[in-house]
Amino acid sequence: MEEYNNIKFLPNECDFEMYLLNEGFDRELNIAMQNVLGEDYLDTYIKKKDHTSKGRERTPDICDSCNQNIYLDIYRDYSGDEGEKEALLDCIHNNKTAYSSVIADIIINQRTDDKIPKIISTLFKEINKDLKINDEVKDTEGVTV
Image 1 (cartoon, rainbow, N blue to C red):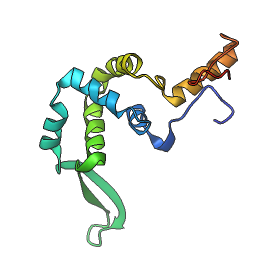
Image 2 (tube, rainbow, N blue to C red; image 1 turned 30 degrees about the vertical axis):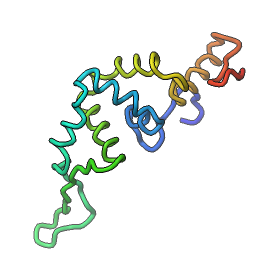
Image 3 (cartoon, one colour; image 1 turned 60 degrees about the vertical axis):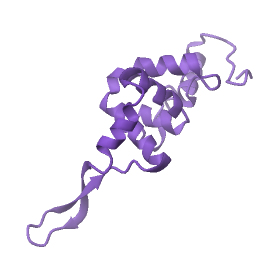
C-alpha cells in the first residue's frame, strides 16, 4: 500500500479515537464526552466500570483435559492518568456515533494549535498535490510545502 499516498493507516493499529488520544487531543475528547453525556459522566463511568470484566483473551496454552485453548479473564483498571485515558476511550467507544461531529466541532473551534491531526493534514496535502487544488499549501507553522 506504500505506493498509494492518498491512503493513510493509523499507527499502532489505532482506531481514530485512540489516535486522537495518543496525539494529545484528550482535552477535546473529554469536552466532547461532557457535552454529550454530562460533566460528571467520566467519574461515574469509572466508579461503575473499574475492575469489572472487559472480556476474555485466548492464550496459546492448551487444557490437558479438554484439549482446547485456555482463556484468561481481562479486567478494567482505570487507576492513574493512563487508566483515566482508557476509561475515556471506552466511553467514546460505547457511544461512538454520538461523538464524531461534537469532537470535530470542539477540535476546530476550541483548539488553538494543531487544529487538524497530523495524519489528516498529511492526507489533505497529498490530495491537494494530486488534484492540484491549491498551488501553495502551508503547514501548521505557515511554511509553504
